[in-house]
Image (cartoon, rainbow, N blue to C red):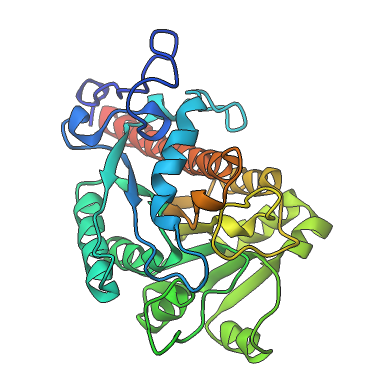
Length: 332
């Protein structure tokens, strides 16, 4: 593809002309998908679904809370020295409307919608919703890339078997994903875990599935740079999916979530670890479990919006670099 064939990305609304608090709350004030001809490099999509929660409900409102909090994001990311919305087309693809009364049907709906977006050539930056949605998203990503490496940022393992006999809940997606063979079991890690478990067998079962664990205490003791380096080595050059439950953060940094646990990482630590993963082959990602009813002054939504911004920046940089390589080869 020549540079002439690559259209200039349409970026956010100009905040020097229209105040940040005015107009539709798309993610980072980016154009809607229909405003860029229905095709984008990175699709920011909401999944307002929380039927799979086991404690506090409310994450169905998380995506729009993140969008509202993202109004203050600016187009240049100094931490990664990149302007993500100029490097690639990023657009808000709206919401996937999933049946709130039928989990099985909802999972199928989410998977089909993800198939459509990924099939168009986009990578997905998904705003949840509860963590149940990670399973259909991973199914769709695996159709395109094969079994993927997974970094799962969370206070909890989310590898339990069932809740009340239900296979699809926000505490079971990664056990199902391992069982279905859609994860690369040589490159799986939980990050930020902590808190009580049902028993030691939870850890034994988790290890058998192939997961490594970096606890929040490990991050505190070893620091973000060392942890990011360890994760990079585990992932290698495999296609990577990152799934972030906002409760990986301490309740001081993310009170607005359904299952808070004391002793979590800071928002600064999370952002620094993600920046340290910028060389990884990030094919899609999600940020889930923001429950705005329990939030204060948008603390949680702001943290989630910045988390999605770092992930979007990584994907945009990689898309732009791949295009440069392709165009350079075509020019020879």
